Length: 57
Ligand code: SF4
Image 1 (cartoon, rainbow, N blue to C red):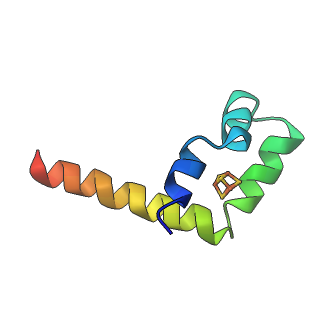
Image 2 (cartoon, rainbow, N blue to C red):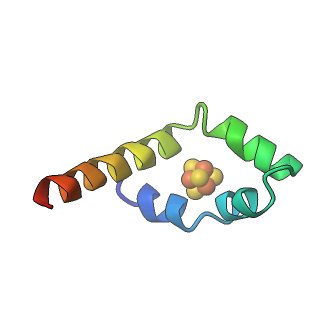
């Protein structure tokens, strides 16, 4: 699902969690990334792109 990558990149919940890591929202967000298939797909795609960039380097 390619549309998920931009969504996770601009996710307001993620940004809020990064700004206020001790907040309840941040704790819920961290909990959700332990099981969310969309976020896992996003991370896998991001890692694949990083490895492709390193390979081109
Ligand atoms: S999957 Fe999680 S990080 Fe991605 S957009 Fe949805 S709430 Fe945000």
